[in-house]
Amino acid sequence: MTESSTRWLFGDQLGDYFLDDDDQQVVLVESRRVFRRRRFHRQKAHLVLSAMRHRAAELGERCTYLVTETYREALEQVEGPLSVVQPTTWAALHLVDTLVGEREIERLPARGYVTGRGEFGRWADGRGRRRLLMENFYRDARTRNDVLMKGAEPVEGRWNFDADNREPPPRSGRLDIPEPWWPEEDEIDAAVRADLDAMEADGIEFVGEDGPRRFAASSAEAQAALDHFVEHRLPTFGRYEDAMLTGDRWMAHSLISAPLNLGLLDPLAVVRTAEEAYVAGEAPISAVEGFVRQVMGWRDYIWNLYWYLGEDYRNENALKATTPLPEWFTRLDPTGTDARCLSWSLSSVREVGWAHHIPRLMVIGNYAQQRGWDPQELTDWFHRSFVDGYGWVMVPNVVGMSQYADDGVLGTKPYVGGGAYINRMSDFCGDCVYDPKKRTGEDACPFTVGYWGFLHRNREHLSGNFRMGQVLRNLDRLKDLDQLLEENPEFCA
Image (cartoon, rainbow, N blue to C red; front, side, top):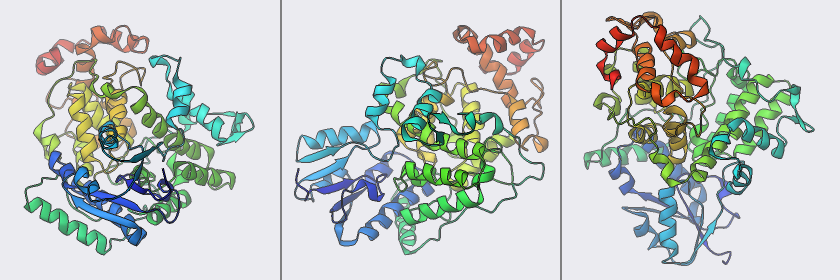
């Protein structure tokens, strides 16, 4: 195709590296049908539209910015050949497949990830579905890209510093570090807010609260957020990576997942920035390795599994969980539960469209798995409710890791736990009406009850999992299991 092709960019392909030169023409499309089909978080809609419009402003006359009902309507207004980088979801890929049959469109490989699909496929082929371990992939990626390496060996002789990154939160109730970097809204954000108000007046529904934009919407903002994190927060990140605090929603997390998933940062450049902090002695290896593991390991692993496992993977439901999500949950109503940890987590999602990975996995996901909520409904909820949520992110994370609906393809055992874990890793339980130690009675912790109820309900299915043998045998030692099931008959099914 000629160099004069116009680059069709999706709303999560906004960084400079999605273009081939400084003169390339661009088309960006706001499709209103996207918001009519699903009820997105208001702040997620704001962030995506703000980021797209900021990118259009940066490109100036090079960008044709179209607001239409559908992508097809928009592209019919663009003359000449198009080129497009592989989109990030199966649905968007099928749209491109259809349009390629109707007009001249050059298709380019995916960008925005350290490990490409071809590299991952070569690594994964022949291993079998149950041997695609993230740790093995991560070590391979570190070696290929020479990240935190000393020759053929990892720096300081260890690949993994997870054992150093599991500290409970400090008793002070806050980390002694500066707040995250916050963007300043501008006239583009004001216009986005006015347009979202108009959409709501026209009958389009959103969930969550409106509020100041908390996440970067341009490459410059994303770089500022990254630089601030590396300087002020990265050194503390590792040790409290899994901790939760009532008064500190952000902890030492980077808040760059949203701009990363919008394509505003190059993930390998992000990793190099953290690595430089380690080399300069400005951040400990445990913190830097933990961060690198998230960006270059887990994120790329999830992206590639989304494609490698195929389009039908999202429909996996090995534990036959079919309970619909309750209305209070889908509406992000924290008053729908008295469990302090779950109410707090829902409040965080409602107020800012974000919570870090432990509230997602060990509070929200854990509660849902215990109660057999439909994993496909839950995947869609995470996609719509989180500012960094996209199909490729949430399908493996929820279906595989969080809900064990794939029967162990992604994780070797269910991520399910009782109130003891939450009590150890947070300050939620002290003022909660429930007691994390109790399985029965009015003040029994719903997570402790749910843990044993989940094991009882799924005992036969999980009996062949060698990592579950001991905990399943513990069911026989519970003297109050019958009472627990009598008080909670939903776990008897």
